[in-house]
Image (cartoon, rainbow, N blue to C red; front, side, top):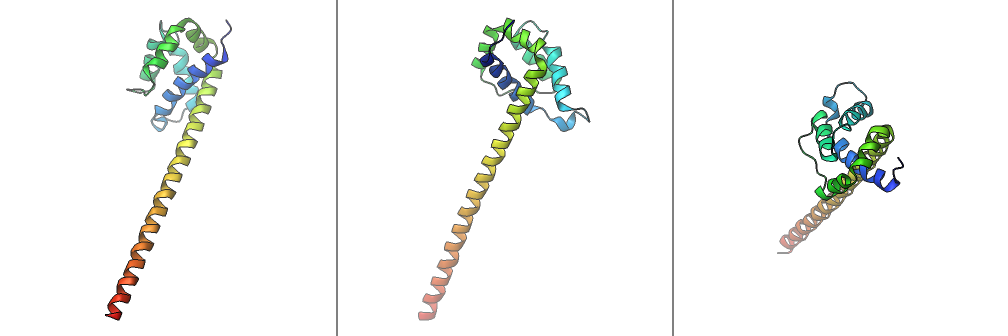
Length: 144
């Protein structure tokens, strides 16, 4: 069965959201990609996409998932293709999902650094203004 690239990307987006939620430090010394792929392969043999995602999350210790319901519904609409891809192309999908998770994490880190720098500049500006006002106030006292 030929799966189109858009569908694979959509599946990988959902899997990436799952992967990002896992607390890997609690999984022990196992390779995260191996654990994720194994749990995905096990979950893929459920009857619906909803059950598959639910089983995957349960297997990885995730209680909730921030994925829009319409995204899951669109995958469910093509459940036969999605479940086939999860069963037979799981290694490729895990590679796509983990790459998306890595890129997401890097972007988030860069955004936080930018925010931190922006807050740092605001603090410096505020401090320099307050120092200038102290100097002006001291000059006024000397004159008076």
